[in-house]
Image 1: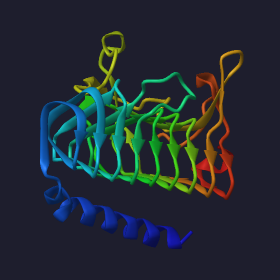
Image 2 (image 1 turned 180 degrees about the horizontal axis):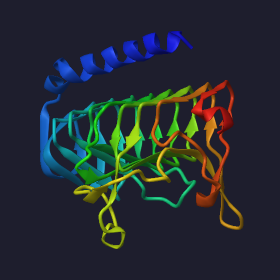
Image 3 (image 1 turned 45 degrees about the horizontal axis):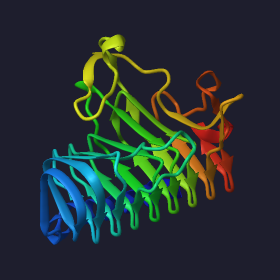
Image 4 (image 1 turned 60 degrees about the horizontal axis):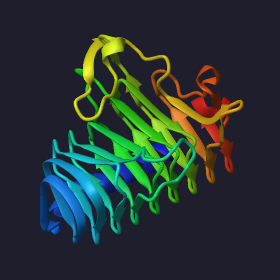
Length: 264
């Protein structure tokens, strides 16, 4: 286990290097408003909402504080998605639970201190790496559900309301560390959705946060979460777990289960 901090540090340096220097400058087209049709590499400034089918032949870069709303029409990105500080990236969630939709990222999703990532029913041929981010001032979610991710998943140091990794097919290993739920909705009935503005928050820990699980609901769904490599979870609050009361079941892991996820 002593090799884990070294591995984590190496990944953090890689991500910070990719998102902190020339990566933003490589994109040529600006999206501020709506997006549809075919494009080269695209940089998001402010709010960019998908209004029709989109093909991006290159990278999608979210500048600091920007928002990409990729719900609804299909989105195909041939390169990487680079998410800046305080930015929100949303893709997919246009199919029923357990069904992979048409949204595709040909490379990896690399996020440096994002406000949040909403990824559902999508295919990522590379890895998902998110370092830091979130906010203690409003209630946001960080849901990664029903995706195919061919590479690895690393989510480290996110602070917010609820985060979870549910019913995904992951080819590599998963490391989940130092992620914390520190707020709950101030008015649960008024908090119908957290993208893109979040909900008013009150201090507290969402007990359903840190769900890392398959989805097994008798008579409705049987969506296992499969992980080809190792599943490693440590220093999360609440601890990473599977939640039977929320349809959760153990993960199917090809390698080792370590840390909080030993029983998951």
